[in-house]
Image (cartoon, rainbow, N blue to C red):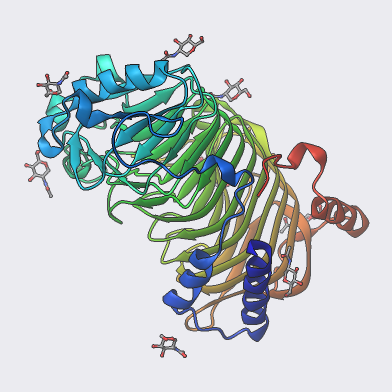
Length: 460
Ligand SMILES: *[C@@H]1O[C@H](CO)[C@@H](O)[C@H](O)[C@H]1NC(C)=O
Ligand SMILES: *[C@@H]1O[C@H](CO)[C@@H](O)[C@H](O)[C@H]1NC(C)=O
Ligand SMILES: *[C@@H]1O[C@H](CO)[C@@H](O)[C@H](O)[C@H]1NC(C)=O
Ligand SMILES: *[C@@H]1O[C@H](CO)[C@@H](O)[C@H](O)[C@H]1NC(C)=O
Ligand SMILES: *[C@@H]1O[C@H](CO)[C@@H](O)[C@H](O)[C@H]1NC(C)=O
Ligand SMILES: *[C@@H]1O[C@H](CO)[C@@H](O)[C@H](O)[C@H]1NC(C)=O
Ligand SMILES: *[C@@H]1O[C@H](CO)[C@@H](O)[C@H](O)[C@H]1NC(C)=O
Ligand SMILES: *[C@@H]1O[C@H](CO)[C@@H](O)[C@H](O)[C@H]1NC(C)=O
């Protein structure tokens, strides 16, 4: 069923792309993105949860309320959560339950595994963070509000909300007010050194800084997650993936003040499917190479996305002076509406109050495919390949691109970028320095059948 729906969606999407002049009515596209079932792989995991009481069926329900949580949004429920976690984590077949209809105030907490079994974390209600940056203890908590560590095979679900109460943090940011000192702020939800994790139907909102971070983890599936923070909230990346492999993110809607998704160093095999992004800074690989560091990202696929009103679309950003590489990236079936910089590679990224010095080394960028990308741009440069003279971008493929500004003045900018374009390309990307066509087409054919190392092994 899901396959058929997905196919239908593709047909509709392609029909729209072919028509050239399409009506990006939010509702229509959203409903297409959202009405699609996700193929879960092992649906059996998503069991019917007993609502209340302990030990129904063969699941042991560990309810935070049974440990004294009040859930009135103002009482400190931290201890109840910690105690309930200890119980749930040490009990096989348990369900850590945050009940619906209440709001639990919880301080920075590290929920540590490994646990006795494949723990289910059922968040039906709301978990909120204390809102005052003054009470945050960086020495003790670092940048982690709710952190889950060393878990294997855990499942997060329940339709509930994780709320970082970030507004005071945002106001205290040096990006909001230059007289403020530039200090880091916490991440709302972090999954760290874990594997085989599924996160399904959870809302993460108002992150103090980043909303949801996946770090040093493997085999992570995120499905039907919603991320939401104010458009002008600083550095509030939606989903940030770092040092992680085999991550599948699908059917998710992200609106925030920074990148909807950011994929940074030591990450590979990242697959994103059916993503709505906006507002925000787009879907980003990077930044990489800051402070002359090594940055490596390989094997990223984005398939079926709608970006609306974002300040960038599909972006790869690296700092001058870095090293390492970004290789094997495919962006396909993407629609944009009023997006600035719809397609951008920026090897001169400089997110710093001071201007950045010119340097010769750079993170190398190659094998980047853009296919079936269309829509409207707010900036004149609809395609921008700003690549370093010393480390050019290579093997860039453009295929079936239709990007235009409202007033029909779209342009393409390239510096030091080689690759090919074929099929319909508007505006024509003549500045993309064509390299050997045979090699390019061969490479493109190979990317169609992704090489083993780029295949995401999780079932979609
Ligand atoms: C791109 O769009 C064309 C139709 O315009 C479609 O046949 C093709 O399958 C699409 N490519 C991908 C990779 O989905
Ligand atoms: C696009 O769809 C919206 C909502 O259905 C409608 O209000 C608008 O007039 C349409 N625009 C065009 C150009 O057809
Ligand atoms: C939670 O934070 C508040 C404010 O800093 C503090 O007063 C309280 O003791 C903390 N609760 C726990 C259980 O540590
Ligand atoms: C996670 O496991 C590693 C290796 O066993 C350990 O060093 C680390 O302290 C654990 N992290 C937490 C937060 O418990
Ligand atoms: C910036 O912060 C300073 C010091 O906290 C404050 O006096 C000033 O009103 C703030 N400016 C704005 C525009 O909020
Ligand atoms: C990036 O990851 C590589 C390992 O793949 C590591 O050697 C390097 O130190 C990392 N860079 C940063 C900035 O952490
Ligand atoms: C860096 O290089 C650019 C382009 O070559 C040049 O326009 C700019 O002046 C240089 N900046 C510095 C600080 O050397
Ligand atoms: C394209 O390549 C040729 C030869 O390698 C070079 O002379 C030219 O400057 C390049 N053009 C661009 C726009 O990079």
